[in-house]
Image 1 (cartoon, rainbow, N blue to C red):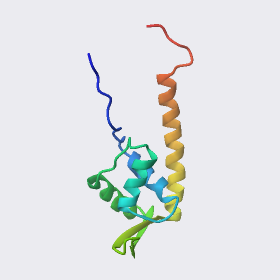
Image 2: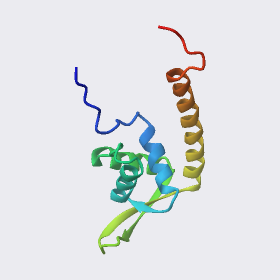
Image 3: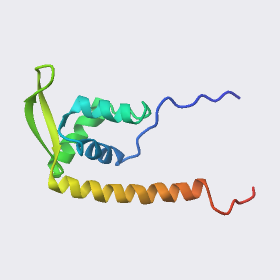
Image 4: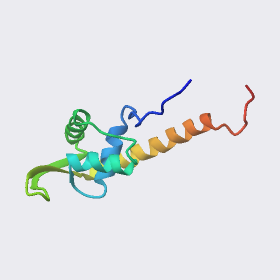
Amino acid sequence: MDRELPSRVELLQGTLDLLILRTLLAGPSHGHAIAKHIRRTSEDLLQVETGSLYPALHRLEAKGWIAASWKLSDRGKRARYYHLTPLGRKQLASEQSKWRAFSRAVGLILNPVDQEGP
């Protein structure tokens, strides 16, 4: 049986917020650049679609974790740039802590210290 590996990884629910907040830690960015950074940094495993990205940006803005303003892009076009707020920095630290705990727990299950027999 020939199995095909997935070309990219599906995002776990709630993970997109963390990825956006982490991306904006480097500084203000517009939506397209945020999606491109996530894709490039994940070695093309994670691809954020427009239909997911912009609702997430609006949700984060409504929560006060990011703020936005209109600026000219490098190409001279008007774009909405997003940046982390102080509340967003706190939320990022909290989300990173939760993600590390979750990742460790999954790792323990996938690679148990006491190798169980079948």
